[in-house]
Amino acid sequence: MERVSESSLMGFVLLGFSDHPHLEAVLFVFVLFFYLLTLVGNFTIIIVSHLDPSLHTPMYFFLTNLSLLDLCFTTTLAPQTMVNLRGPENTITYGGCAAQLYISLSLGSTECILLAVMSLDRYVAVCKPLHYVVIMNTRLCQQLASISCISGLANSLIHATFTLQLSLCGNHRLDHFICEVPALLKLACVDTTVNELVFVVSVLFLLLPPAFILISYGFITQAVLRIKSKEARHKACSTCSSHLTVVIIFYGTIIYMYLQPSNSYTQDQGKFISLFYTMVTPTLNPIIYTLRNKDVKEALKKLLSGKLCSLQM
Image (cartoon, rainbow, N blue to C red; front, top):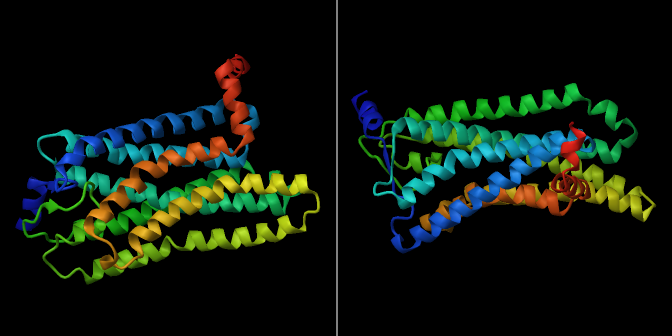
């Protein structure tokens, strides 16, 4: 108990990119730039989806939830990262580290489930278009969004709690720029076999959504190939391309981070991959959906011209 309380009082030193002091100013600008882009891009998606009646559909309901997750996820990590990059002491309190761990795990896990839910929405839209409105009703959409949140929260509570209960024996120099499970496990001075098993089970659990996504897109591909009209086929593909691009970037980064052998890349490379995942990926989602989606483009044009505001009067 003394060791636990010692860690609680001391907090952690986030080593981050201290081995590359000449990069810290550049990385500060990098994080700030992408954080601002994330705020602007995702707030734009949320506002446009709310103001334009033509976007009051299940697809944009889930997209709004995705944008909200990305906003909260980045806000959980970016400000602390910028403080440590420019501050004299790269420290975080034990409570701050615990909060960051719980919240980021919960939001990241929720996004994994939500992307699978969005693939279900695309499956119904393409494979059962005549029943789409009936199947993807408001109540079901809200229930699916709630299940995503509860699943993510449950995964975070189990995973983070097991990690934070480890005895660190006074070790408080965390070789990362955020509080992350693998980095915390390296500080433990006790057997971490159980924690590593929990981590593996957690990662495997989060691999179920991409398996569901692959199955959904398998059925979608079959349905699209049966469509004879080129215009209808192009429309069906365009409704799925944005989501599929986001899925590939999101899961591609996670798989590269967590499912490779630890000796396949250096610790510094792992930090830069984490930096891309935590700061860049949330920025790409609104850009992808804006550039590849005519409905969002039209809604943005209306918003900029002030027509949306007049619709709400």
